Length: 246
Image (cartoon, rainbow, N blue to C red; front, side, top):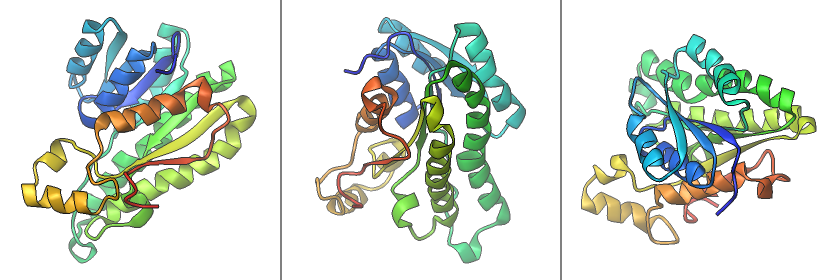
């Protein structure tokens, strides 16, 4: 396990799935975690961390609320003394073939998955630049690398995160801030469990390792990228996909 003792982390989309697992694993590694989600949706995540002896608090924020996002990193740094790790994980899908896709479905997915990362990261830069160090981690998707029919909005948003991270990594490297991306493949979450058993078998057949990934597989990657052991890695896309896309 990587040692993140004394570090402060913000994780968006922390109420369930991958975001919850990342928050739990960062806390288990010693970080103080600010679990961000709408309303009190991340309260269960925080309760689980506290029950295990970790340190965490809830941040009730909608990632499409730019004003709230702009305030969050500064407030966290002022209250907890620093901000070391930002995991931008919140995301949604609104799937449809392009010819049938409504403009609102495009705009909402881009706003949630990509623009929110811009807003939050820009605000997080201030305390990180001041302390001359930090870890920015964006959660993209294998779909952003290989595409998927019916997901042009989602694929565009997730591919955008990759370009965003590579460009930003060059901007802030001199301040010892690393910027990396995790690109999960097919992960066993509520969404994948909702499909039929046959569909799950078909999905697994596309993966060389022969199984869906777990949320802890993704969380382990996040803990690594957040750690001192990853200090010489920046502008990188870490694929956690079982070989689905190489």
